Image (cartoon, rainbow, N blue to C red; front, top):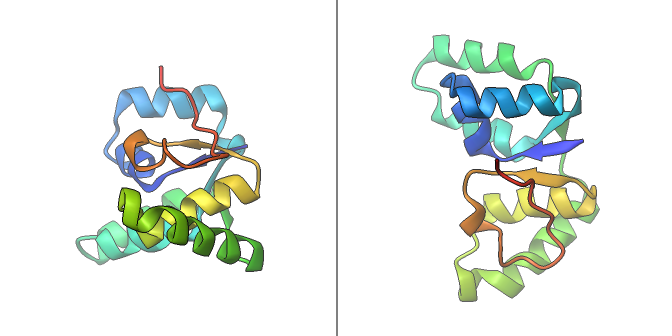
Length: 125
């Protein structure tokens, strides 16, 4: 299973052929997202019609909820990297989900995660 960052789902919703081809190669059944990505997508929806489209697209994707292990790991990441690297809370929670669930993270923003120890980034083609 591969955890997708919010920017990957946004690109898929925009019909970015490179992202869509990569997701198809991985297999939709092997794609997952964090509930943080769900919240970011809902927050960014321009209107109710777009929100409905987003919800429809997410209905077939596994969503990982935040549990105690992810919360603790995210707090540790914030403590370690917020001041030195500018790690933001949503990225810390997504990174913690990736690490805690032992999933590679597929992101278009590798600079936001590359410095995090123990994270495994999905190789971009």
